[in-house]
Length: 174
Image (cartoon, rainbow, N blue to C red; front, side, top):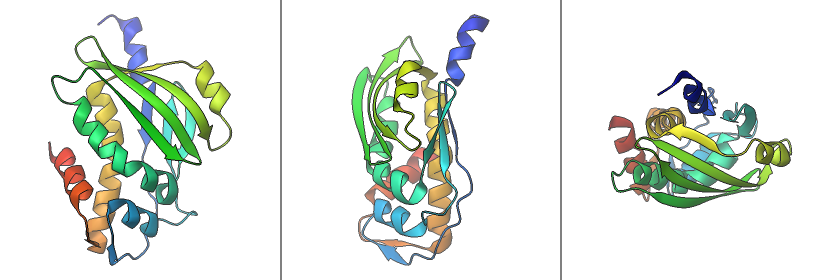
């Protein structure tokens, strides 16, 4: 890959941060546990889209995204994957992403931004598509999943439905 093309691989990154987790003994599922464990004052994760930072609240945004995030990360790693769409449906992080395989090992993410904390929608739209290697995309999101799974295990959270939690753990050990 030529050097100038390498710049596109860092058009997508995530800083997981280190949010303080609250006590959570049990929850219906992983999304509910995440919403309960992290207060609105907890440190946010930061998604960087073509150099624009977007805050993702653990207790709100990530709690809303987790049920779609885990299946998405599984899907894009399948050899036969070619394209998918995901709708991020939080009030403060609302977007439609059309993700297509590009070349052998990259993804092109075309986003329609509806809302982002800080009202960055037009700036994000101006920055266009993000092109990122599949493994980079997965490893960036894995930082957030690792933080959540580690905190849930530390709290010994009992889940009524542990499907997404177990799938998240499997992604992290893959």
